[in-house]
Length: 275
View 1 (tube, helix red, strand yellow):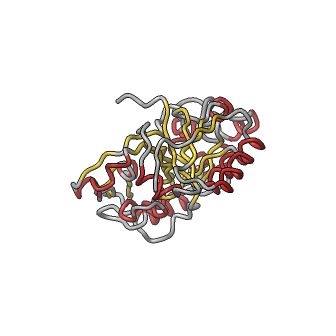
View 2: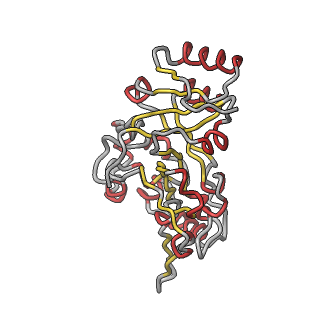
């Protein structure tokens, strides 16, 4: 499947201000997105709390429903940004001395360079993201269906030794057909409920906690949001379209935001006229 060269994100002026000021894109857990069904599987109510997404569309034509639902006809924007717009990371020499475990290296795809996320940030946490490895694809095209086995997949497997496994990659990639007008692509982060240090040191208590999370015996403890840094190249090539009925006052705010945080970025008028 060919990945679009650019994707589009509808947002409020408030969200745009944070994107420009922080130079980040926010990912939200599946239990925080607009479709409450997405957080559930056939065998768990909580595993959606281990998936975070940033939602975009591949349609280069403006969408009136998208304007109204996600941006606001009077106070929003549509952001155009190159696909895979995020900064890449390498692991410091100091951290390499801690990460001697072969298990950690395998989890990162055999390389400590070109990582999607800053590994050091997760050293002392009880989780890390599967997509940290540079060879793991973060961007997925959403498939629309009314097949409940895909909308609510069975993801938990149990083993004879008492161990369990959750195939959470099956979550967050399908939506009901009623949402198909969105033509959505999304960046996905899948939380692994065990810390990097625990992988390196093989802490049995942390492995047991991971099993309990999968079986809904305790809260995963994954933050509701995570922000990824935009690369300089993607930030400078960003384009913005103002909402169809943007008020004069909101246009002043938009122009001021761009002038202060992203001078030179193209800002265009919407091609849609709304009464």
